[in-house]
Length: 166
Image (cartoon, rainbow, N blue to C red; front, side):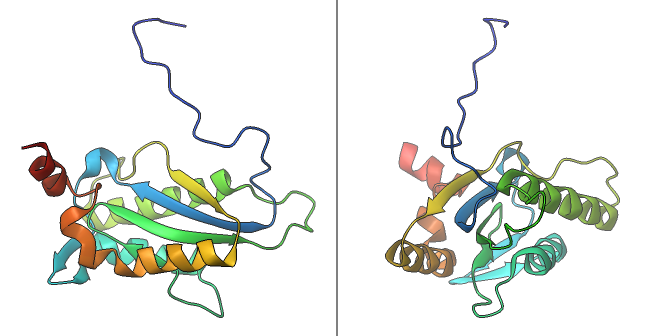
C-alpha cells in the first residue's frame, strides 16, 4: 500500500449480512456535493430535470406499497429507506449491489438528459444505517420528510457548512 494515500475507513458493519431482510436508511451524495437535483424554495424541494430522473428511478426500485414517502431527493443528495424483503431467492442482492444499480441507472439517464456521456453524478460511497426498531424507523421517516425545511442547517448544504465555519 502506498503510504502517501489516506487509507479509507470501511463504513460497513463488520460481519453483518447486508443481503439479510431488514430496513436500511441510506444517504447518497452527488460527486463533489454539486447541487444537481434542484433547489429549496421556502421549505419545499423543487426538482430539476436531473432530480426528477433520480426521484423516478428511486421510486421504481425502492418504493414501498404501503408507504410511498420513504425518500427525499435534495439539491445534492438523497435520503431514503431501502427495504430488503425477498431473501428466499438463491442469491439475494445485498444493499451495496442495490445502491450500485440505482447509481448506474440514474447516472446513465442523467447523463443522457444532460448530454454528458461518462459524467460523474454520484460520490463513490454511500452512508447506511441499519434500522432496528419501529421507533428508529419513525424518527428516520420524520427526518426524511423534514429535510427540506432544515436545508439551511443541513451538513450536506455547502452554504450551511461555510456559515458554520465563519
